[in-house]
Image (cartoon, rainbow, N blue to C red; front, side, top):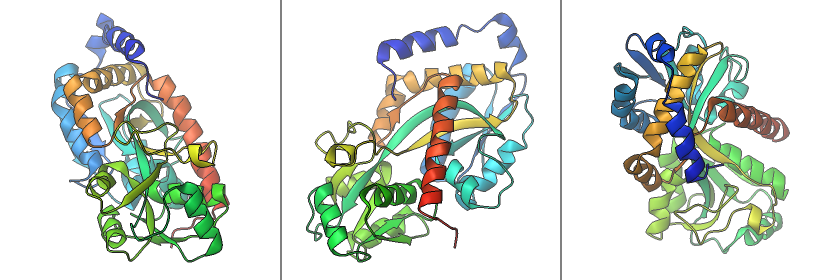
Length: 321
């Protein structure tokens, strides 16, 4: 949940008033920020967007490195092996959880990684091709039940947040739809716009332009509350599936046992950056809402997300092909 402005302001102001010992102990040399996706994607763009301000606040250079592959699992496995002194941490997406559950990468998302901060959340938008005769979620459920196995939803790949959203919808609505995994969100959206597939639970950042130009019809958002950039589009939960809520999020994690003083300092610096009006505006333009908060708050949220996503993977019997 996004914190109220007054509460966030109080947190940010207090978090930066670190003790002299804290300021002296960390950092003492350049800080490495590992991005678990290739260059050019949203996670990489955010990391490089935050990099200059983060370096200024920490008083040391921040070096961004990319370790893509296996939906973020390769980079996450490397994060789990990092030195725990805090001079290296990672920026991830929510796929860090499903990737751990679906691949053979040697890390456990709870046991081997330490939450630092949840930076932003991005709702997925349930979009359909304009030719599909549905205007809302009840329409879609009725059509899917009338034509079991005939509707196809696309995703950037197995285990992606977009895929998990679709499988969660299938379980909640008790419908049979076919998953079509692509090698990235771009090809999936291209096939949806051209009518080769019928629907998608698309990431807001990449899907919004197609909604705004009328190429796709938005019938719901997957978040618990309506998205500020699509205020007239109701949530899935509002349309007959109470409790349905899933979002993609961008966050920072470190290795288990990471120096708590370093966690606090990095958390405080990021909270300051994402509270700045210019950064908040840039995130919102990308379809992302600022979250922020303490490492403890993120830890509670993160563990709940692991349980939720693990249940979807188990109940939907998702396997890597």
